[in-house]
Image (tube, rainbow, N blue to C red; front, side, top):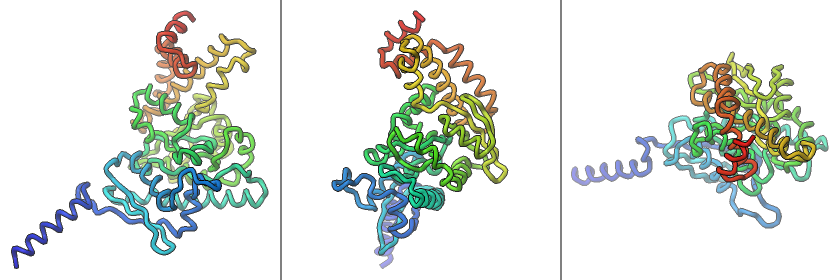
Length: 371
């Protein structure tokens, strides 16, 4: 009798160990809301037009984005399973730290403000047929290093990739962070994005979207407040990309931010957040287009190299502040600017020719030595 109960105890402990291989953490079950709420907040179905590009259920779609968050938070061994019980949708996390789900529930609650704004936009007859409501799903929820303020996500990030960080914009900026010492696989932690328009749209939609920001004011401000909060009441650094976003910062916070302009905004609870103005990550292709430089290839290259220096300086600041949020922001910016625009300007030139003009390294070297 005693022997059997001893065996039963051993088996129970083994089963518990298998179910929870992360230091005995039992995991966490979160109620995400009813299926109607989860459907709208996860833009379900993400990619259906008669034929579904990926024919996923609602549960599979939610699971997909939550698994991305786990990976980007650095919890590669953790897992999540999404189920439906009646009308309720639940996420079952395994191997995550206690309280991991708090940030997810916060994001979804704030997302309701965005949905309200988008609904009003439609009621006012300003919503476009080829726009998609899209919250920044799949980001690092807990182990964020910095925040990126952008304009709007490209439509294909939703309809094709189902990955908020899959775009030419984010790919280029990840590369710039890697040139500044951040391993590529760690760059997603630095790229927690807040788009001031939570609308996936074609790349050409920028000018139309500039008229809709007012519908999302409550959402935008709350996202900035919540995502810029680091541990121990520290503030994470923020980069404001592109003129529409820098104009929004001016309108909302009264802060004028030119490219490589540095300032602080109040993010609630008396927290000051350092914000750096930057070019849009894709701006370099416009600046370096001969058509925008009176047809001169030399002038286009010079313009592109200048933007490359600015972009590398901004990514250097973001990388450094992300690693050490309490350091002197202005001092770091000065040293980053000195590095990429003075002491390492030859490397800046070469990186422009390899990454934007797609030259081989030896061709880029020859170009830069000649100039």
